[in-house]
Image 1 (cartoon, rainbow, N blue to C red):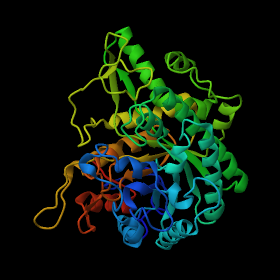
Image 2: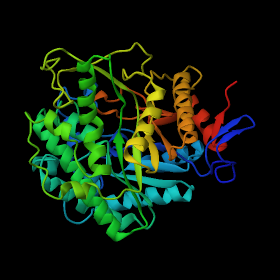
Image 3: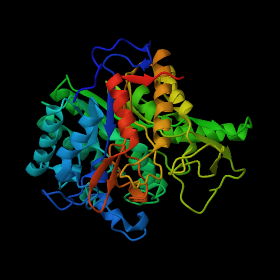
Image 4: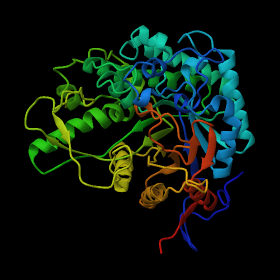
Length: 476
């Protein structure tokens, strides 16, 4: 089902009672392989770090695992039908590395390629463009056993995997994202252990961050050499980081967190070098000797697009002592003494403050500090305590309000000259929310996990109206 008015609508502006987006603006929904696919033992798939982590007692809430998840592996046609009902033009999903290359190297698994080939054909048959992410955190366990992202070989294995998959599927897939949120892979996975593989080694986390970026650069080079017409990019989770006060100590705390959250990726990607202040901040933890000559040039491979995932803003303050603020390992390597400040704003079920202005601030900063590059919001959404009502429907007015506010901010950014070309809502269907298991629901579509029944929420119907109008109802 096509989005009414996507190609014929006027340009951005208030037309009648609709606040329109530019012609051809990409409306989409996003998912990730381990969160929805299930079928972890089918089709030749090998274990990933998330299979191992989820089956380790105490790591995931309620002992949940992605063994079945949303059973998307068997129900993908139904889920593509949901996408068509939403009227989206694009679908962002990730490929499971252990399904495509179970040994982490060598030839591709025929059954894995066949599954994604069938999914792509189903999407194209419904007029939906596939937007592929090559890595959304499910590293083959065999590569973690060999050292994981902290070792250089994993970057090289990733580039080989990316090239092999791109060679097989680029005839039908135009948009390729190398990595989703390398910050989470590196720092939640290897610094504070909240995500797979659950390691708490700050020095290893810094090495992992670098090798993720190196793998990205090598993959871009390889895919570009195969097909120069592919649209290549990466997705970063970016946050505005503000000091809690005008005190110099708080300003320095914000600078340090910004360095290890945002600039550690933006600077090598778009400037070809790591920030010098980051190197100083982490000097007692690592001398960053893993950055070999020429690595930063590889990471700086030209990008066609930059994906931005946005959820909230960080407001921070110095604790007053150069020591960790809690006994739990910090994901902010080199800034373990920094504290987050609760501003008393409304929060989602994740405990994240709702701050639509932060989305504008992130987009504006990227363009102002790093120059023009086509931007896509590749994830934005919210978890709320959704419940199936006695009438069989799911009312989620908070999600509708959340998305409406953020969409309006996106339109304002476009009006102000920011080159924003698309918006993917997180997420299509309720799913396995990493260490929170099935306790958090982000979906536009409710999932009854016992029956796998899909039930569109009120937000799904509302979003379908947005995509078909290519715009929002003007404020009264």
